[in-house]
Image (tube, rainbow, N blue to C red; front, side, top):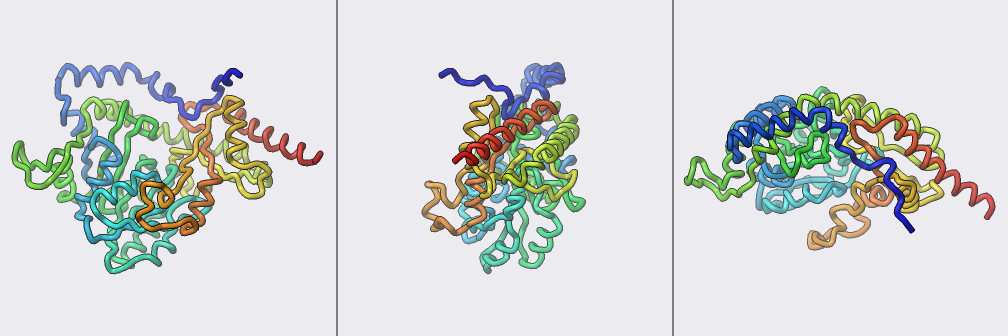
Length: 388
């Protein structure tokens, strides 16, 4: 049987890239002409611009979002003997970053309505060895900064933000990257601000952390051939920085487009709530930047998530699952000692969540098409049940 042509892709970057193609080519050509491919001018320019946009003083570009977490934690002097709290339902890079510095990850459950870290659960696992908490600003929505700051002050902890999905997100008067001691961002191509390859950045208000990060990404060198600590090679390419710098002025509008798309999804999907199709809650109003638009296939739904996803794929509509296996159940990390049932909300969400197409340029008619197909799938199933 021939495969159905894609009618609505999960991500389509052409809308972002085609209108500014000349600017992108010019940015790349400047680097080619200058020949400053490693830590060139565009890197410094982008670091300053993105840090300022995020409400931070300093930005240090690295090779990936994972390195931004791992090297960032190291720059914050988090390591062996320290416990770090993080949610079980995050991309594995968050956990890997903690493990890379030798710290002990302490996983906690999430809020079932937003999928953000449950701070009440986090409060129960704080010990005398706990040094930091990593709030993951998931799907484009920030963990409440006010609640985070109260939590950190109460328990005397550092806040290290994982903002890989939250470029320019806002909540409680704060912007992602401006709440904690430091924050890690990813510029993977499909992010709200994406490079033409891998890339990441640590932003911080602390000059000492920034300087240590500068050394760590470049073999621990304070100056050429003078290595004051064991660093690594993790530098944001100048070509990638040039692309990101060219795209940065458009990010706010792209985020606004994402919010408008999400609001239309909310409206179109509202009649399906009684059938168990529930969008994740937006508790940030216009501060949510919707890196992903995620729905839950609730228990009352007559179909399971996999059935709906398969039928959407057959109809030419691509979807995603972020994430199908929580960190504590990943085979690589069984040695941490967690078991099935330890984090029931994260485990339940992993079986229910479905990410619908979301990107600037997704048209109103495409959104209607996605929702109409979901409605048709649900209604067809309900009709079949009537005749059983």
